[in-house]
Image 1 (cartoon, rainbow, N blue to C red):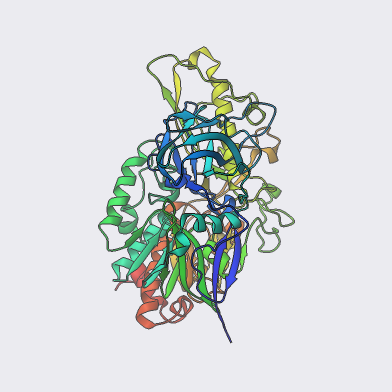
Image 2 (spheres, rainbow, N blue to C red; image 1 turned 90 degrees about the horizontal axis):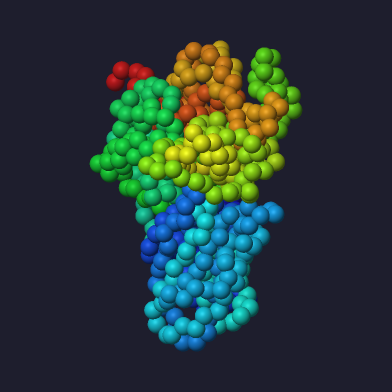
Length: 600
């Protein structure tokens, strides 16, 4: 007998319960008599940015002083101090680049105009750092956080305590419960809403899936963990969309980008277009929501829970069908679906390319994947300018010098997981960028150059791939079998990246691409639903494929085609009250007609 299970993801750990979870529960051993201020709840961010991409790993959403070398404006907020007297102030922060140099991300805290004693962001790892003691009156108090460097200082929360040594949690799981307890969120009921289909992940794949499902009259929820939609195509990351539109021209034209240079400010115009297209649809949009768990019974998902990134409020989304467009395959992973990570042995699917050997496909399976890029650029300023020394960046940049970074500014390391170690990977790219620019500024010809953009959201290429009834592989692109369930097409070359260090280059943050041109190729619908979870589809780079099978179709327009196919499939699932697998088996002609392969 299948029992209903509720999975809440707490600090990256899956907690299973027999009843629907609410907010975190009380942990008596930790202090809760003080005043907690979560960084994400600050009323005025100033020049700081809200960084949500490591919530599961570190136990919170952080404010980041992303000043690209210049201190940012203060972040500020007001709090209610319950009683007058002396208060000890603790800040959960970290020195993000430890070594024989001053910490790069230093900052100060001011309360009611008084500066606390300690400089913060200077201690090892994520931990509570004592900022100092201050005498406060009862009532409203103003907290300001001052960035001192412009180099990626960060904090998760501030805690005011009457005790000089309060017991404070630091692991992500305990923080989850404690924050809900101290803020009083654990007294709230979780609101629920029913949809026909819930799509998690608001990149191009998710947007396309939502618009396709909406066009068929479905009630659609689109959940995104950033304030804007578009994923890697958003104006936060600024990667232009590549690949062909296939049969999805109408939908994809409304959400894609022009072919501007990667990292270009023109991304803002395509962002406006995309947001307008979504707003004009009937899709229920839920930006700024991080998925934190799901409810399943046997092999069926019944609901997912998502937490608002600033308020911490949780909402439950129920549906008959779910589409995983997270890129990292979060829904499939949590639900227990089979997935792959890394490169298959070349012999498993006969993916040998002798010309490039191990760089293309290894003799033995390994954990290498295509990496994360952080795009950046510079421009001429009005006046000559200098750039501060960045000794913490030099071990990565060495003597390299550059004024911009495109797709091949990419970091992957087989000893680091693209999901679990995402903060370290992104920070490694920061060091490469700042070090290169510092070296470039030494030249008199660059005296007018200024940094204009560095992304702080990493543009990831590959992580988990959820397995479907069919695993797409290199021979499918080369041999072009006549699949009866083709729903996606692409003609872009198979394009797998490797780190240049594997070819003897000293820079571990640079990559190269291997292109294998094979002409037009086609992808079957069986790649876009989980073989293990009856009502879960996936679109985007987490579809069912090998590492090499991902190499061509991983780009955004192609992933958007996947989204369109799954959105239409969700409509047929409702129409016939069947699973995605049954749509593929019994109603594939109708699905292909909706996609555009058959005349209606």
